Image (cartoon, rainbow, N blue to C red; front, side, top):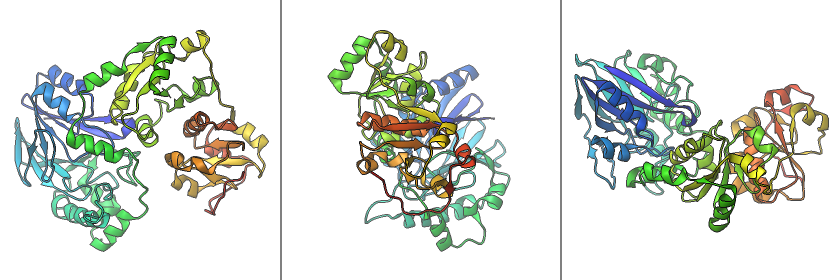
Length: 470
């Protein structure tokens, strides 16, 4: 028996490769199929099943391309209506994989079709569960992503989740291993551990949602409390996973088209494509193509793309470090942005050497910020609400990056703003978006918020109403 977790840090997502007697199954695959196919080929195995735990909202799954290339059967649990061919399993149905058996446990709550797959070893003993977004390490799936106005509420879904956990999962032996679909950093839960697997017994002892004495009413209140609005692309990705999508190979070929600086400029003018610069933040602020947006590959790239680019069909032109162009196309496609139409050959340096116009963002470190600080400065804190409420600079304004497109009308293009986050990544993203929209009076701060808090700059954990000064 082979069980391998294939973890993708950018999405905090775990896919799984399981193999027995020359037969393999893939659980919750990402969009690019090559890693799974190559692994099976290297082991002399045939991919027999593709198990999907639910309609993922935070990424586009690779089930369709993988089935097309391998002939494997796509398996969903009950109530999973799709526009493509698949097997809709019944609760308790079993699937043989070599000497192993997968048993379907319908565990609605995160979504109505959410399903956990129980793996039985060659002796029929319960070995592991692949719990999708039903049970995480330290948390459970949020119940608000599949609610329907006037039909199913988040409270309804939370009640279903309570029953699923206690009737289907918590009754299993304590030594069963829990393999979830996500870890810390995913927006599919609110309190996930950085650990990516655990025993069920330990989760019963440590996971707040599995407390033995917890009533259904308490559970519903706790799992629905403090949920932030889901990223705007979640519903769109879930729809793609239900209805289908363009082949990843076609998407990759379209995006991996090298364009000279002159051709890049021409395509940008002809199409109105978004210019997406994915280099390191320190390189970007020193020089970039005017009106380009920074979302660096070496941060939480795909989730920020999904949160900040409203239209999945938006045409995108890429400015990337040389050698990372195809990676950028792949990571865009993982969250449904399939219309990358080319990249700048030779990167930003080629653009600059060709004599085309460039721009820059005034960027300072924490020490310089401390030297300039006074209470009259207009400071935009682009961190998340929880970070802001924990500690923030006195008199700063909370301007969360997640909602920048909605908040932009609240600030003044004639005012100078100092922009900061926890490290400088999100502040650079925010500054690039503001700069592209005509906000030229920006000072971006690179450095750790811990260093800001340790400096002479006054901070507070008191959440008070804050108004934008103009």
